Amino acid sequence: MEQLTEERRLAQAGQPGTGTLVSNLIRAGEVANTTKGGTLQPLSESEILDNLFVFNFAGHDTTAISTTYAMLLLVANPEVQAWLSEEIRFYLPSADPQIGDYSEAFPSLKR
Image (cartoon, rainbow, N blue to C red; front, side, top):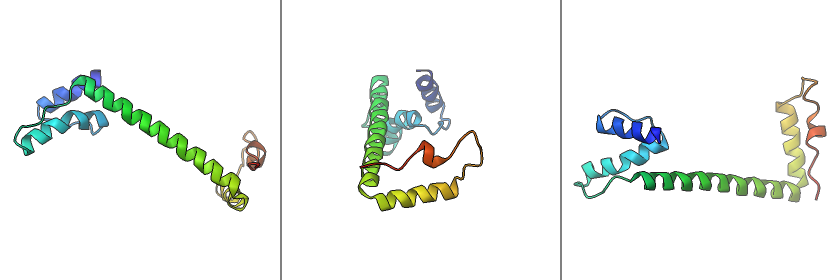
């Protein structure tokens, strides 16, 4: 809520915003009003919070689905799984004995 208040204060003072999603949502109505003849209303606090919830949920949902599908593809293609495992071992060698071997911590996926 403090960020909303601060962004509105900056917008009203004509100062640049912080470049965050909140800043862009607050300034969207104002920019549209100056370029389209003042026909749009700025988003209310409730509308901004609703939009933030949707963006947050969409980001988590998309990430979860993509990760699940990637795991499915790795299980279905053991040769790609082996190649990926080799690449990880090459670029992230385990020199620290506390970490252990990657193959022990993350064995190949089983069908």
